[in-house]
Image (cartoon, rainbow, N blue to C red):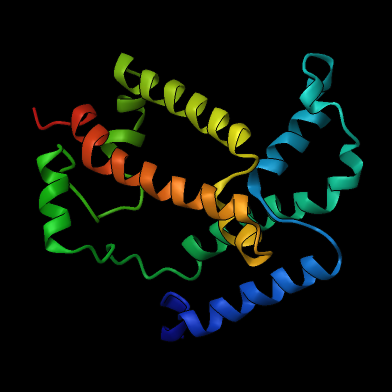
Length: 188
């Protein structure tokens, strides 16, 4: 039973991802989470307000299984396959995060300084969520897909735009981590 409580090694999860990608390729499908959000918005009637959401969402129903799988997989992994151990972070990372005001770095997956209701229901917390949500939505639309779609599906199909997008994601992540995050979260 102990083995179930550990993360799956690369030699198990990697081939499983490869099998899924081969099946999608065989059936002429692509993978990405942002397309699921577009489908859900379309189902909800967003096509009345924006042409982007006017498409045959029924042809994308199969992709909604990805959302269900992500929700169920997350629930099962947290509640049945997790031993509750803290996240293994490097001591240097913990020190850096404490310098930014994250007191329990690695103790939980979601830091309370960002995700607790006390943090969310502040001007700073709401501003971060609104601006971040806008930037993620804009970036996903501008890049023609999300990180999972480009990095997993696009790269495995050898699409040059996906390579450019993934390089951009990494550059953006480095800029956020080393320049913007320290401006937003500083120890008080």
